[in-house]
Length: 319
Image 1 (cartoon, rainbow, N blue to C red):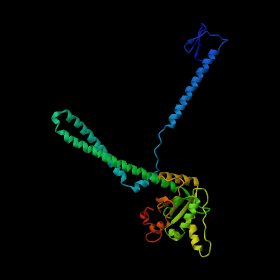
Image 2: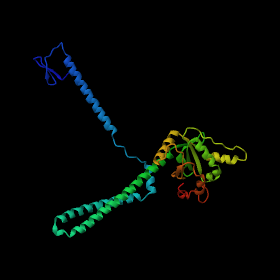
Image 3: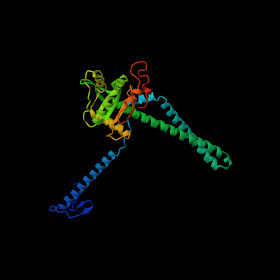
Image 4: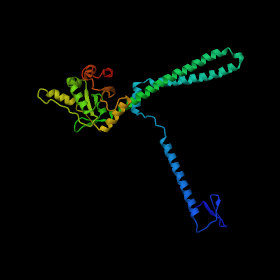
């Protein structure tokens, strides 16, 4: 050990202590060496533990928004960035004015000959403080609205990347239905989906005329039972009903994760049956707990063909 130094007199010095060295009796030396080694190992473990704790205590990174979401946000709110710029400019100007007014106030209070100026300086300082407060509040409100919109657009973008099976050979993302169909996602136990299927029967033709296609997603892992009337009289209606309910989600785990996130944000329990409707543009139109309001869809959505095709899609009500 480098810590043991044997002098010419035969008296080794170990960590500042002296002892008569006996070559036949090295127990003390080995015990000391073992103690030193154990101490070094303990310090090494403590250092590793501290490094691990430091790595685990890193701040949570801020949410990242995609470029597409930012561009869509700018298109939907083109003047928000301009407003926020002017808010910051007004805050900076008013802060500088307040700093100058504070300096003038200190000088006026310390000089009795300038006592008449105190009231005027206080008025200017109050205006500056009010301007900073109002512009700060407006900036804070616009910034929160911007972040909420970016988060919503990001969720919609994630939804557009999920896959749907049209038939046995064709699997396409949700985004491919933009401008073509208004998707209605029905999520819940298989019994809930089967009942939604029955409730939609009287509105089948009207829903198809409005470009509605249903995406059933069973949360219990069981396939819902769709009973179609195969009689000759109902052949045409059965064909339309199969078309209305033909889409099937692919990669159930990704759909489950997306739905769980939406429910969490909406403070809805994870086992609640829900529906979610999309516009022709792919944006979320509305959502709710329970069965989809098929009659409201028919009453509020414009047909996808004809003079008013898609024109009123952005003004078709909150449902």
